[in-house]
Length: 167
Image (cartoon, rainbow, N blue to C red):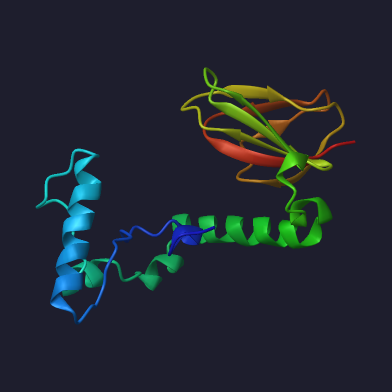
């Protein structure tokens, strides 16, 4: 599931907004939102009023961001991943028992296996490594700084992701 604009890393905040004509319902939603966010340490004045037009306006996407390189890059990444999902039968299967995740909290690196594909992700700020079977081939990757050598060592210079096909 993608949130509005996530496919290009939109800078627009996604704020809950409503347009209810019933004043009692509108007030109940305001109070409910304030109570919900109070548990996160927000004061009642910090929660955007769902009925205020400014809340809607603040959430309008800035479509011009797609012309900026960093947003276009993210949009292209999502397009490639969605094309891969359409092309790979194992990614279309909704059986979650067919998915395995190996996550290393200390290294901040995870390996997600589904069918013949492994997605390796690094959330580390610096260099990180992970292991996949020798001979795995790169199917998609976030950028060229992630290297998968013939022995199966995946080397990241910073945050990134790579999808490999198992031999």
